[in-house]
Image (tube, one colour):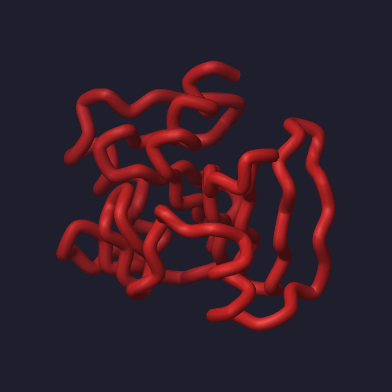
Length: 127
């Protein structure tokens, strides 16, 4: 799993539409609207969340390890890595949010990782 902060996940641009994601991933297992009003396209190991204007906010994925900004990191190492890398990280309801790396995760819920767009990061700050 290769993540380029605010740009792409495994070669898929974070500046994408729900239609483009469906063209790449196929038909989702389910589509629903969450309590924040974001439409969730659930593909099993990936959940893409879009706003009403079809702008991607975030992608939650299941992954035991990632390559983030060129560095390979396991989920178990992620908290330490983020603390060493991002002086602006913040905690939101038990999630560690890294503005520098564009990710959010709950260390207690391995291996779920949320990759943020810039719009999605603002949403986490505003909650």
